[in-house]
Length: 278
Ligand SMILES: C[S@@+](CC[C@H](N)C(=O)[O-])C[C@H]1O[C@@H](n2cnc3c(N)ncnc32)[C@H](O)[C@@H]1O
Image (tube, rainbow, N blue to C red):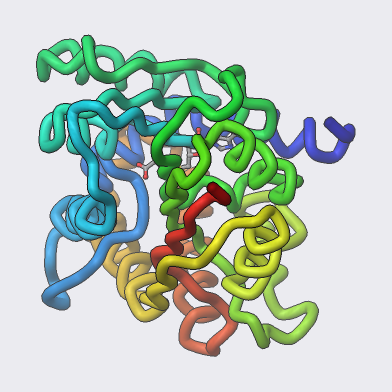
């Protein structure tokens, strides 16, 4: 791993392990699914819309109790528990943050799913897993944190069984995003670029994968960050009792940058679904 990529990984680990992030995601996002939601109504609760993304992605896979799914960047494991409970499949979560992994393990035990969900501390740029061992790889809003996305895609391709499926979401830049306009957005995540739909199509095709479907759902990105911002503003006085004021104020400003960038047509988000070479 290059020094630059290693430092990006360190930043993500420290951020998600911090008590500020942990409290924020629990209080405002629901603490299970911490990704962009799919909204049926303007004022839908963030937690419900976020769960809807998991349900929608799951409908695109034909999972059974024999399936083994890998979730990379699994956060608190909301999707893993959903898949294991609904389909009876095995799910392995690989995630960088031990704070989140510990909560994930507790939630799985409480839901009686710890025999079906394994939680592994690891980096998705170097998966501690065997070649060709998963029927599906799943990821939600996590690959953006990598400073070396091609390497993550190499790893996904390596661990998928022939013909296995890769389904993921990622906050991305628009294919035609002008150079130099994303500074305020990227600052919040300490990166110098985002992926794009064209980037993932190109990179995955080069690895012999075929596109099953790409659903462009970009409008939900702006709506989601607006909703999170509204909730954070509405509960500001309570949240700052548990999360540092500096974190909350930075988050409010950061969310505003994402909403503005989406309105300006600079961002993209959606469900991308590919099949590995058989
Ligand atoms: C926005 S959260 C999404 C979590 C989860 N996928 C969900 O949808 O609820 C991004 C996640 O990516 C994880 N992550 C970031 N960089 C990672 C890396 N290099 N390897 C593994 N996980 C990583 C973080 O720990 C965090 O849980």
